[in-house]
Image 1 (cartoon, one colour):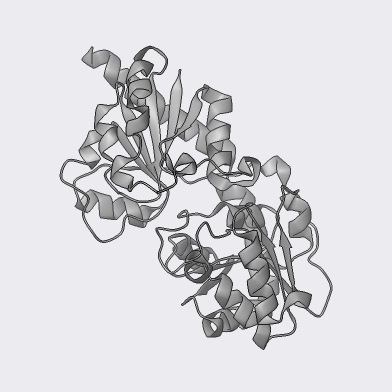
Image 2: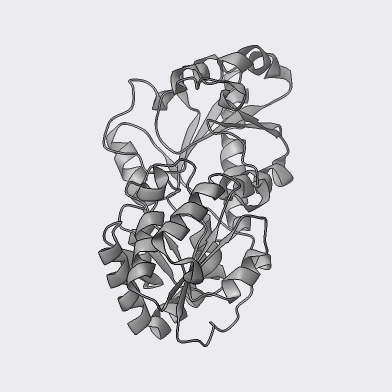
Length: 340
């Protein structure tokens, strides 16, 4: 089986610590294949719009008929990239964010041999639009994570590992709200895992907020299990579900290590957190909402942590994700052979 993975984003600088790269790497180890970014903007002085992504690679993609059995396109939203019409082999779409409220362009979903989503709410929306998506939860390599008791200090220590890609995301991903919450609560400590992007701007914001003594920014590949051992919980905030994965990997890592989570209501994983009690849902990306969620988590910490320990290693196995995607690949290839 030869799978070619296509991305509309630039390849990350710290691929080993980036969630989507971890998913793709696990699938490549199991089924082979390569990764291609359709985004040309790393080498251009003026960014091209998404409508033009991939056309600089069109010749290469069309020559890949003999080098690949199918394509797997990973996208955070349902933007209709025109280049996908010209692929010489069937294509699986993985929607890693929410579907949104706007119906995609006519025929877009039907273009794919299979559509895969991460949560049932997103699947229900796509069914309303005539698709028949498969639901495959993401997974983490559980062997990388072990439980250790939370730090016995008077401070409450949060980890955020969903760093912004753009300056606007300091607001939309809640970095600004977390820094403001730290200003209001001197017992709150924050650790941010960074991606090699916007590190200087982050340092400026921490200094401007006057919370340098409460904040650590780690801009390097690290042992996440070791970092989690030093915190009480992990957090991912987002104003919309389209800018992060439906199930952010950093939160799955935390659950695998027995740490409860804080997650924005806008992120599909919030329904799972509310149902299982493995953390607290943050109602808005504001310092006030963050403070309220932190207060609830601190007050109910023992119960929330126990729930995290119970579900994290049960529900999010990377091995299960790889097997489920392998079954989808085989289904698509079997259909293609019968058609031929």
